[in-house]
Image (cartoon, rainbow, N blue to C red):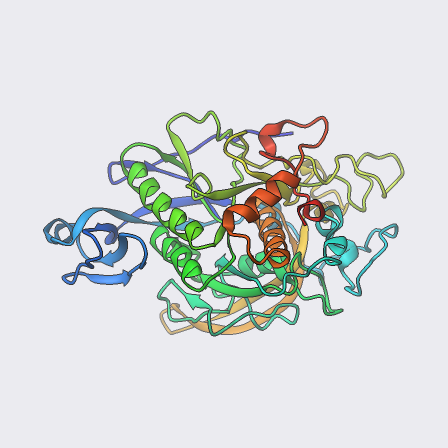
Length: 459
């Protein structure tokens, strides 16, 4: 059930870059004023402006010119930082918020919680999350969300604001949805509160920390993301969720350097006890056989790379048989957009799917996407039109699809495993998830790695 799109490459500064960021098509560009540098030992380049020190690894993010990089005795190697512009997938653009939708939850869905929107959460139903909560709800664990910002003001989320950080340097703070609503949706999938108000997350009692790497104009940098991973390890996060990525990047040239830096950072974080859960990407690409190309960071060392699954026909008559309680495709079937590859994917998990032919026909096709928290910002601008703040935020709920939504289901599951087994290190938590997972009958292992997420058995 995969659909292979044409890959587009952008020739930039003599290199070839392209990709998907936060699960979307992007334009990538190399910066000329900011670099990722390998340092000589623990010595930081005192002759350069250090943006991120990244203690624990022998790399740093600095500002300066390329000539300054060459002259600095503290710089062993370097490459330009990458700046990436985000475009939301079309399937998400057409999805409504709950205030805009005119739908009723499937009447056959019995709700084991007091959450009014739980009947819309097919992902939690498919994962038997209420049964898992009979063992643990994630208390005593911490999950960082490296994304567009997590809205601490959302009534269905509880965010540790003192630990949250803004890595972008845009001055708009942390624990706010300054980069858009994506991060708040991801955070809700991980840990929306079981408070009788809205939805429930996979691990509602885990501690959420916002690590914002996107600004209002939707720009992110590879250097900021690396720094956020190092910070996650520094604050003792049990899990870091990265619903973002860049693909395709050539393995040679600059890609080799980026891969080396990423592997060093991810290995460090894993060693410190932070499990890195990463979206596999939404290109419908075969990562196993895309010669000389890499997908970052999900193909980095120690990454738990998550592919997306989803139903067709949740709560609507997709197969035109007169019934709205069956599926044209079950929740564990591969989503049309997901990247795949037997050795490139660790787990498959609910991320949402869509019948593209149904869009615009008046049926609630979007019910097959993942439903969770949203925080939609309105920005304050100055006389020149530059964004200087957040004027207001609409807190609501809505639907999105992507490996971006599959990854936080795994991140929440990892938090539950860690909560139930406090002595587990990152590798043991990952092993528990992989051992419990199974490839669904009749489906290709390439979409699942170890298999479809099974939280209850992992516990």
